[in-house]
Amino acid sequence: MHHQNGDETSYVRLSARFKRAIFDLRFRGVRQSEIAIQAGFHPTAVSKLLHDAVPVRAGDPRVVRLGAALGIPAEECFEQIDRGEIEPVRDGPSATIGAA
Image (cartoon, rainbow, N blue to C red):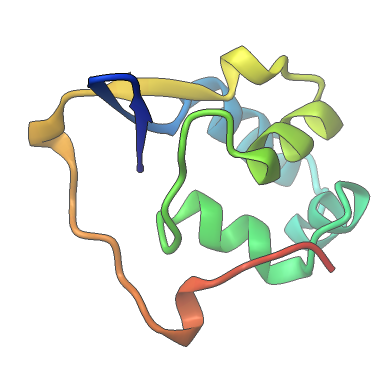
């Protein structure tokens, strides 16, 4: 959820545009698993990203690849947040994702 950039730490989350693009597709009948497979992910990966089950860092290649499949430029996949908005990240076996 944070990215070390020199002495400055920036905290990011998935942008509203990124999440909205996925929800819009789902509303139109596209299954979330189809979205994941198109981007080269295991079907549960999209859900874990959307529900903050895994940490996201600025420039995260998983998000960038999924954003590209949705037609969203990398710089528009993330939004910066204040440190006070950060919620604890769940860890454990269910918190890891990777490409299929």
